[in-house]
Image (cartoon, rainbow, N blue to C red):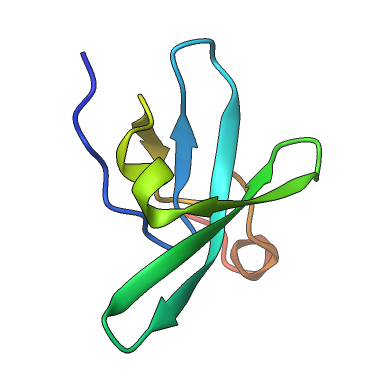
Length: 77
């Protein structure tokens, strides 16, 4: 069972069918967040209203990127 997730830029989420997407940016008005720009694994993007976001059945997949070029120069010994 999932719980309502707050959209966090840079975080990967997954829905019940296994589709993963990342929050790329948030749109704001004077009253707070209005839109969430998401990017799916294959690269397509979609804009979701904050109201629609709150009704999504999703879970956090990971907050850590699978690969970061900056880690390549820092071996873990």
